[in-house]
Length: 114
Length: 116
Image 1 (cartoon, rainbow over the protein chains, first blue to last red):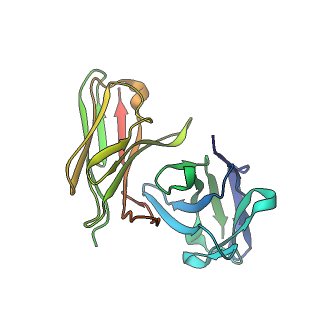
Image 2: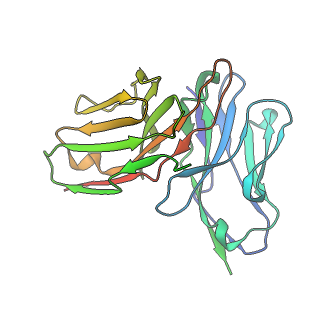
């Protein structure tokens, strides 16, 4: 069965600093990978997704992620964090090449210090 | 676009009572998903509908849980009887699935359920 690991439960960065959130997946075939963000009391919003092609994917709000098959990773990055980026971030993988059955990681909570 | 609409946003009930959660997907979407989010288990897919038909309900915890989608614009998730361990945030999501292509799942704001 596929699985997603987000090693960092909680990360704190200063506003303006760079950010990298880690995501590792376990899946036998070519994965469909996603990053979602959840603000307090809100639903999940898609930041970006990878299905195929260029392994560096650009998303909304200045985020990007890089798919590295050799490392089974799909890390999320942002060069300069804004206070409004404080939220919980979820990495997800689609099962069986179908985007409907998403398996989510446990999430990484991001705190941004002024 | 109004996005995915869920009601109620918060529900507090007593153990043994019936609970009904409601979802209106984005107009034109043909797939609907119910998820449950808890601290212990994270986000879990409960059930997936395509064109109003349940395709995968393998995530439904037990017979106390049931979901329906009587038409393309409405779905319910019912728990009867409810138990304290059902306390969680329940999300509804929808997407537009096309043959041989994939699309984004759009999530509603969730219903926070507390069973006392």
